[in-house]
Image 1 (cartoon, rainbow, N blue to C red):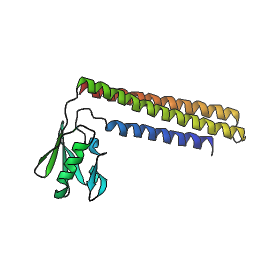
Image 2 (cartoon, rainbow, N blue to C red; image 1 turned 60 degrees about the horizontal axis):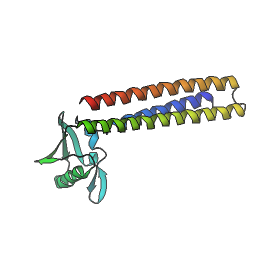
Image 3 (cartoon, helix red, strand yellow; image 1 turned 45 degrees about the vertical axis):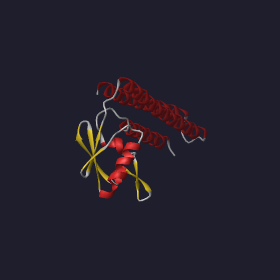
Image 4 (cartoon, rainbow, N blue to C red; image 1 turned 120 degrees about the vertical axis):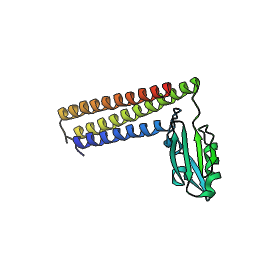
Length: 186
């Protein structure tokens, strides 16, 4: 593996860390309805725990209400029960063949709790990025030790990886501050 391969692989992994952070932050409820909130809920589908999105159509009725339309009529009760028993604090209501899920307004205390959760997610992502930097630097040192690259190339590559790390950490900070603003202003 060459120094450029190490840099390219490290950048790809750091990008995946950012994508993972964005995915995790989508699950944090801000009071605004978003179908992604329901995606981690599993429904008992003929004895098998199945993701809600695989047994129902998820949508938005308005800014504060989600709609869930199970593909099979006999799944209405199971879907409603799964939503109610999830740890999201939601109270679904069935209307005909659609389940409406109103999003309760957030209290100030809950908003502060959510910002702590968001900061924790951000810190986890920063740790992941720094661990990737460490792994890349160790790989570069091994290449230099095995005389596959020069010491100058090793130092130059480590500097580039540090700049890449700084760029990704700054992006994580930006994503976290945007999510915190979203939570506090909704």
